[in-house]
Length: 108
Image (cartoon, rainbow, N blue to C red; front, top):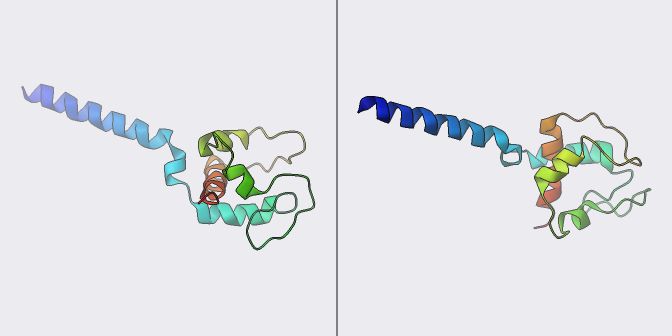
């Protein structure tokens, strides 16, 4: 009987570990994402309410955050393979998740 309880605890622990590692957006830091946006993105995108315009034709981050179907996880993945007009920023997975979390925070 104790073997059965033990295996349930092990399975529960494994499932918890998988869930925590599979959802980087839950632990993303939107404040760090704002810093990244100001450093890398504000030349082309309007990244904050205090910025009035950008030099590029890229959409404002707030607009991106309010698009139907916006998903921070999909945006995180997109940042690893950006479109041709976007520079390769060589972001880490955490930095990309932080930037996506910041953009998501703008929809509120």
